[in-house]
Amino acid sequence: MTGMPEWQSMFKRCVIAVGGGKGGTGKSLLAANLGIALAELKQHVIVIDLDLGGANLHTCLGIRYPKITLGDFLQRKLTSIDKALLPSPIENLKLINGSNDPLEITSLPYAQKARLISQFKRLNADYIILDLGAGTSLNVLDFFLSADYGIVVATPEPTAIENVSLFIKCVMMRHLKILLKQLPIENLKNRIKDPRNLETIRTFRDLLRLIRSFEKETADKIESKLENFKLGLVMNNIREQSETKIGDSYKTMIHKCMGIPLDYLGRIYYDDKIPMAVKKIRPLLLEYPNTKAAHAIRLIAKRILGMDHSPFPLEQGNSLFDWKKKDKDTSPAVQEMPMGKPQKELPLGVRFYI
Amino acid sequence: MKNMDECNYYELLEVSEETPKSIIQEAYHSYRTLFDKDSIVSYNFISEHEREELLNRIENAYETLMDDQKRIDYDKKVFNRIGRWYHSAAEGSMQEKYCSAKTHGKGTEEVRCEDFIEENGRISLKKLRESMGVTLEKISMITKIRVPMLLALEERDSVKLPSAVYVKGYLKSYARALGLDPEKLIQAYGPLSLRRS
Image (cartoon, rainbow over all chains, first blue to last red; front, side):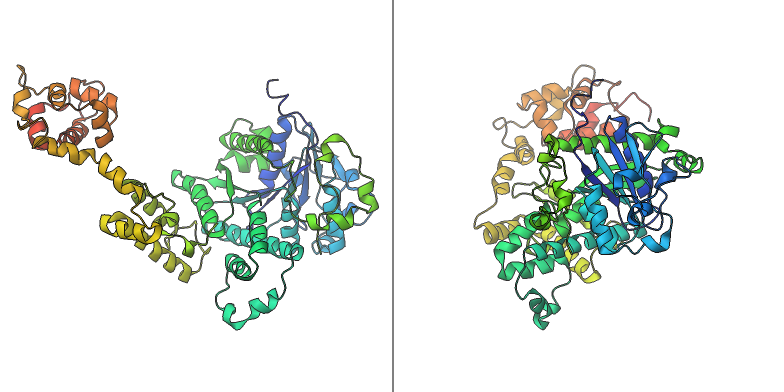
C-alpha cells in the first residue's frame, strides 16, 4: 500500500461538521459517503447523526434497524458516548445513530448539548463526522461551530444558495458573539443601540467596523480569529456545465463580502445511480463505487486528508470555545483523559460556552 | 480584509496596478456577473441597495481603469504617482511599435507584400517577417496566436491549419502585428486552407 505511511491512523480526532441551511441538498449522503471514503483510506472514522428529530444517516449507510441510538445516551441509559457506537458494513467506520424519539431530543437543553459535544470530541478516531440537520437553529449552529472544520453543502438553485448564505451568516454571527464573550467590549450594546449607529449597522462587517472604531486591538484579534475559521463548500447535484462555475464564484463572493476564506472542496455531478442507491438502502460508494459521483466524493476525502499538512487540525490554538478551557481543565472529566502522544497537541476539555 | 466600500478600484476588481486592460476587462465581467441581479450566486446575499451601490462602484472602477487619462489621474490620487502599468504599457505596446514598422522601421524603405511573392505566385510570410526583423515569438505575443500555429501558417501546413475562416482571421492579426494591410496580405497568401469547413 503506497499511501499507507503518510496517512497512518493516529487518532487525530478531527471533527468535521456537514451542514448548510436547506434540507435535501445531500448532507447525510455526503457525510455517510465521505465517512466511507475516509475509511477506505485507512482512517478510523466515526459518523454521528446529529440531525435531531430527522435522523436517517443509518439508512444512508445501509443499516436498517439500529438498536442503540443517541437518545439512549442523552437519557443517560448509557454512561458514555462510546457505548453508543455501532459497527457498520465498512471496516474502520462506526456510526452513532441519531435518536428516533423526536419530541425529547429536538429541543436539546444546554447541559445535554455541552455533554454531547465534550464526549464526542474525545472519541478515539481520526475523523469524527457530524451530520447536521437543516435550518439555522442554535443547536445546529453550535454543533457546527464545535467542529474543527465545517463543510456546507449546496446545490445550484437559488433556494439552496439563499439558505447556505443565511447559514454562513448565522454561523459567523454566532461565532462573533462567542468571540465577544471571550473579549468583552464595554458598552458595546449601548453603542449598537445608539440611534446614530442603528441605521448603518446591518451586517456583521458593519458591526466589526463599529468595534474597530473604538477598540482597534480587540477588533484585530476578533478579525484574525474569524479568518481562522475553516469552512469548505461542496456543490452537489450539478447537472449542467454552466453550473460548474457557481462554486468558484460563491467562494469569491464569500471572501469579498464577508472576508472569510472558503475552500471549494469539490462538486458532485448528478447521477441516476444516487437515488437508485438510496432506494436500495445501500451506500453509494459500496453499491456504485465507479460512478462519477463516487469519485468526486473520494476526491473530497483526499482533499480533507491533504489538509493535515497545514496547521489544521493539529494546531488548534486559535480554535473556538477555548476561553472556557481554563475553568474546565480542573473538571474530573478532563483529568480522566489519557495523555497519550497525539492528544498532547490537542486542547482538551469542554470547549463550549454558555 | 477591507470592506468593499473602503477598497480602491484595484482592490475592488482584485487586479494590481500593473494589470493590462485585457485582464481588467475579464475581472470586470466576472464581478459584473457575480453581483448582477440575476446571478444566483449572490442571490439574497446582499440587499438590493448594497447591490446597486456595489455595481455602481464596479462600473466606475472599470470606466476609470480602462481610460488611460482617467487611470493616470486616479493613480496620482491613490498612490501619488503613475502606476507601473503606464511604463510597462509603453514598453510593451509592440503592436504600436510594429505598426509603425511600415513607415519608419527598416530605414526609409517601405515593406510591400508584393516584394515577397514567390515563383508559385504566393507570398512567403517567413521572408517578409524576417526582412522586418521580427521573430515568431514577438508576433505570438502581440497576436496571442501560438507559435506552432504561426509556423503552420507560414509553412501553409494544411494538416495543422484550421478551416479557412480561422486562417483568414490569423492572417489579419499577423498583418496587423506587422503593420501591413490585412486585405493585401490575405490576397497575396493565396488559397487559405485545403481543409473543407
